Image (tube, rainbow over all chains, first blue to last red; front, side, top):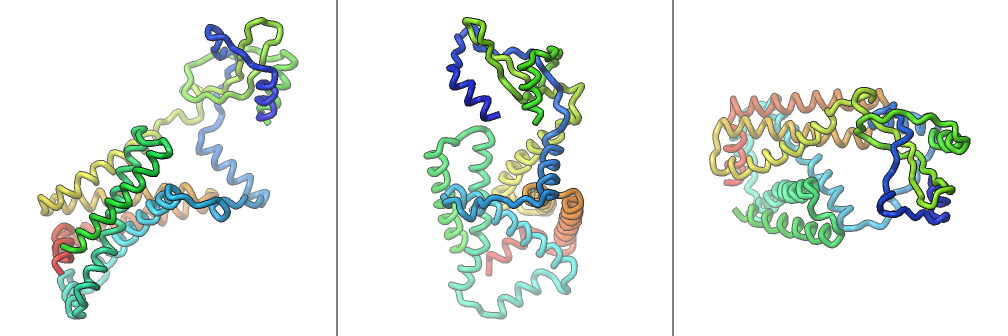
Length: 169
Length: 158
């Protein structure tokens, strides 16, 4: 495919404005959906036991990359936390106030309490602000590379500031 | 491979022009230059997926995507609202929105990293069970205990 495109380019493809249209002369309906094609890809490659080329182990890490996986990481962590809380509510004896009393009885210092609040607030803040960044991408805004970095730094700053503010409450 | 067959067939000029239908997806397979003409025309062999012929013309995936974004926006709005108007209705809404958002989010993780029919089935089954239990637990907490909004307030007052 690439070979064909290169040979076309070499022949100096020049299309005038009026004729710069693709003639849909030979049209064949697609036989597979995207999902099927993805499944076929994985089935074939696992069957042939093909190795996967290294990707994140060799590619240079960038801020956008790190923020992207952190968005996923915080999402999974928060989801796990909520699920653990829900399961705890179902199986653990006693009520919520009882467990809060338990923690209060440990007489933890204010810095530890503030630190714990920060540790809880930061993933929520980061995932929320980066989520807004994602939604902006979804409506097509902010794709230029400088914009990606700028919005990324804004998310990091906002997350940090709001987590500190919440921890101080 | 289909592309190569197409190229070969076009080179031998043995391709019957196939009728055009309204297309949802286009997959350009090959392009050919007519060297006799002064003006160069691009004729492409295109794979179209018209709704009548496609294996799945369903818009399910597209609607799912939109649903995910809508839910995210709703959940975003719930955060200040829960702070300003805590109560049982807010608790229930938060429980539902949080669990569904988490369920769909983890669903994307499964799609990205889990491959193979059986493994996907197992992963999705486990995820459904987890989300169901999570929702049940949150509802139980909302009904029999202080509820999500109050719980956060109590925790933060420590």
